[in-house]
Length: 554
Image (tube, rainbow, N blue to C red; front, side, top):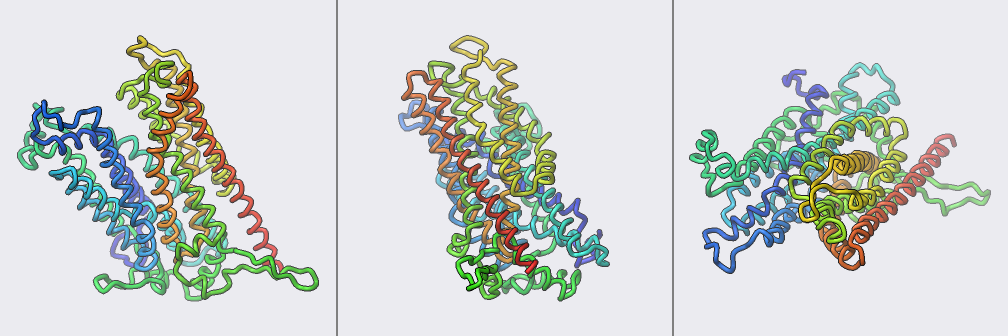
C-alpha cells in the first residue's frame, strides 16, 4: 500500500520485515562484541606499553576485562528497562523505539571509536541504558494484529469474534517469526563481527581494507567496522519502522511531548467507530491477567458475588506501577517464569563454553575443545534452530494453545541441559593432550543444543504472548519493561553463577566428569521448577477463564 495513504498501515510483509530487522539489530548489538571483547580490552588497556612491561594485560587475563565490557550493556539496560516501559505507555511505543534505534546507531559508532577502556565501558553502558527494543517489540506485536486485520477488512466483512481470532493468529505467527531473528543474530553476529575485526591483520593485501584504513584509521581503531555495520543496520531499522506503521497507543491515553507531532495514532478512529472502539477496549481490559476475582464475599444463599476487579474503571485506567504489577497473581507469575528462564538460558550459554574448554575427561571434566571446534558446534546448533524454530513454534501454539505451549516449551528445553554433560563420557578423537571433536560427538552436541534452543524459543514466545494478555493495552509497555528489568537482573547473575557452579563441581568431586554432570543437573533442576511454575500458571489461567465464562452466563 503506498505511503501516501496516511491512516492505513503498510502491508503485513513490510510491517513484519521492519520488526524482524529491529530484532536482528538488537541481537547483533548484544552479541557481536563477544568475539573481539578480549582483544579490544587488551588493545585499549595496553596501548603503547612494551611487551616486557609488568603491567601489560596478557591474553589469559583479558577475559576478566572482557566480561566487564560485554556485561556493561546489560547493566545499562537493567537501570532503565522499567522507566522506558513507563515512557512507552505515556508517550507511545513508536517514540521509544525510535529513540532506542537512534541511540544504538549513535553509541555504536562512538563505541567503535573508543580511545580508552573507560570510554568503551561507558559507551556500552549508555547503549544498553537507551535500549528498550525487546520490550517495545513485544508490546507492538500484540497491538499491531488488530490494526492489520482491521485494515484488511475495512467494510466490517468479519464479525468481532472472527477479527479477534484472526488477530490472535497473526500475533502468534508474527511473535514466532520475529523472535526467530534473535537466533539469526546469535548465528551470524559473531561470525560477521569476527571477520570485520582487526581487518589490517586479517586482510593485509586487500585494497578495500586499505581504502577504509585511509578513511577511518583501522590501525588505531581495529574494531570499528563491526560497529559501523551495527549502526547502519540500526539506521535502516529506524527508517523502516518509521515508514511501516503508526503509533499503536490510543491518543486518549498518550501524553504529547512539546517537541513531537501529535496524533500519530488517530487512524484508530478512521478504522473503527467510537462504539466499536469502546467495545474493543472493554473486551481488551477483561483479559487473562485482569480477571482477579474476589471470592471471599458470599451471600446468605451460598451464591458467590465474585466479580472481576477490573470492572472498577478507576483502577483499570490508572498507569501501572511496580506494586500494582506485583499485586496481580498472573503478572507476578509471568515475571517470575520469564526471569528464571532467562537466568537458565544465560547460565547455559556461559557454562557450555566452559564445559567445552575444560580439560578432557578425568583431568578437567570437560571436552578439551579449541575455540574453532566450539564455533562449529554452535554453528550446527544455529542451523537446526533456523530450520525448525518457526515451524515448531507455530504448530505447537496452534495445536495446544498458549498456556499448554508454555508448559511444553519449558519442559522440552531447560530440563534437558543435563544430557549435554554425557558428552564427556563419549569417545574423543586425537590424543589426550590434543583431543579432537569426532563427528558423532559433534552431531550429538549440535542436535541437543539446537533442540533445546528451538523449544526455548517456544517458551519465550508464549510467555511474551501471555504476559501481554495479563494487562490492559495501556499498561503493556510498562509490564514488558518491568519483566525486562527482572530478566536483565537474572541475565547479569547467570554468567557468575555458571562459572562458580561449574568450577566448584569439577574441583570438589573425585571424578571431575561427575562434577560436570552435577553442574548441568543443577541447572536442569531449576528448569524443572520453572516448568512447575508454568503448570501452576496454566491452571490459574484455566480457572480464571472458567469463572469468566460462568459470569457471562449469569
